[in-house]
View 1 (cartoon, helix red, strand yellow):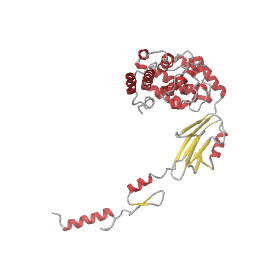
View 2: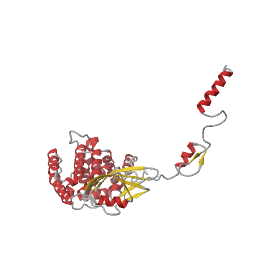
View 3: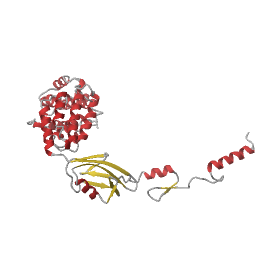
View 4: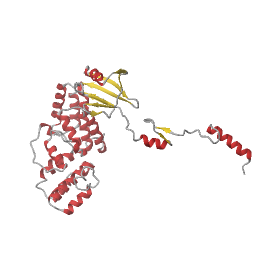
Length: 355
């Protein structure tokens, strides 16, 4: 059993470990909130309390859009009021302090091209933002749109056409991001339709995401149409409230949002935009014949689209088409069948009554 000396030795060891006399505590008796003056008995209780304090997150806005990313492209002339901030008490441009957001806006407004580093902060947090100013030349945008139609209006996106397009717009140096977005979109189509030796089917959404990022700040009809096709592929119908410039797609989107199918309209020039096989099959084959087809007709037509061209989102659209036809003909067995197929789809299960 331990000796008295051993017990005394252990007590000395604990003194050095604690740094206090026996019977006293080195731990504080309370923990003060770092945002207010309340005191709590433990760190855990204090941390739970601090969750109730709103985090004053410094936030920048560009034309009413919150800048969650760390990069911003400004490609059209900016005006006072285009840039705003919330919970920001300090701002620097290229390391130089500024007095206000107005000063930042005026500095960016004074140039047509340039790269800038912005730091904005409050007493709690600091963030940084890289800004590229490259005001797009409207004539160059027009040239690119014309070149795009000239090369791809037939629907072919073969490599020689891609190379010819990029070569023909190489001089358009104020809209390089615009060209990049269009080319990324075409590479996404090639990946999804198994037309690429480099990118696989699984890469198509990554290319579409890159295209959306590059085209985000451009307002041309072509950019709007490309964004619409990508949103359609993703079933992001809630982002597609404005006309896309593709009338057949607009009425199809309305149908997939639960509305009745309206009659077709004349196509605009941008309707010649190349799209993926699955989207074209839905827009050009299934939707036009939907009203006059039986459920069996639609189910048979769907088999004409090879599975290799279908994403999960495409399959959901096809199942929803069958569900809508089953409802229209009051085939309750088929209604339940397709409702089950869509049960776990967050876009369509609200329309089938499963959520």
